[in-house]
Amino acid sequence: MSDILSSTHLTPNRSQLPISWYFDPAIFEQERRLVLDQGPGYVGHELMVPSEGDYYTLDWSRHGKMLVRSPGGVHLLDNVCRHRQSLLLEGRGNVRNIVCPVHKWTYDLDGRMMGAPEFDRNPDMGLIETPLINWHGLLFRGPRDPAKDLADFPLASEFDFSGYVFERAHVDVLEYNWKNFLEIFLEMYHVVPYHPGLQYFVDPGNYKWGFGERWSCQMLGIKDEFRNQVSPHYTRYRNAILQYSGGELPRYGTLWCILYPNVMLEWYPYGLVISTLVPLAPERTLNVVEFFYPEEVALFERELVEAHQAAYAESAAEDTEICTWLHKGRKALWLNGQEDVGPYHSPHEDGMVHMHEFLRRQLGQS
Image (tube, rainbow, N blue to C red; front, side, top):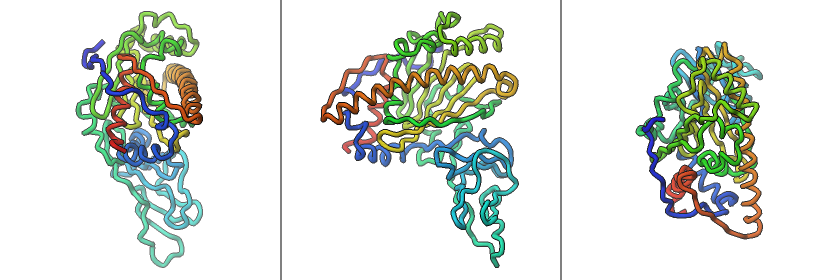
């Protein structure tokens, strides 16, 4: 496995986060104001709208915003008519112009007003646009610049989307705090006891961490028992990989990376995944999961695509079970007025240490 990542263990300055940080509305509002609203603001990938006239409405915004490709590039536009605030489009498709379904107000692909039926003059009211920053096709609305935050990210070349297509996205509703999800994403301690399929796909004993100021990553090798699966979904995924590769093993089991505070970049054999946490309340979170594949795989290797997503869903369901156990235990302490914090395991929980220290820095003395 590559040596481009540091294997240095982290020495935590403190123990885990206080129980109140998972339930207290005041803490949640501080996180929203000082952490989430000050992040890079990922909105979607340019591959969602590959051709002129393509649109893709963003579920996480309740379809209130959309990506649209015009001759000049990709725009993030408000998907709400300026007349009576009707939703304009929903889902994914291609249009010549953007037309309101109610009164037929019409906008061009850049969001400029084209026509308002029966008005003497067209109102000067184009669709509201948010400027975008592009990193490897990932689109961000700011305020942070992801290119600066990822300037020292050693795995950037592994997230080259050239030749890839956007296959699908889905949104999971998580009934627990957003940090529960990140803690499980950022630790290896649970993989062997809780993931019967994943633990025979990746090698939980052969991994390396990498850390930057606003990112971290995990590089996992392929396990020797890769060919001896116990999970039907991972058996199917393994077979599809070997069929497509002619028996050649992938160079990694997976790469799991995070751009703080809430964007996860995931590399899998012949697939890339972007998942974004959208915290709605202390105990409610959206997880927007986007799947991308090489065009040949997406079009002609449907078994590989479907097998990957089935294996991914298996591990995601197991992670949700873990997060629910954490949520229930912490909530019992919270409601009973109790506090408890445990030690970290290094190196298995180094990613969680790094995330907790990031949050403490961002919240400061608050």
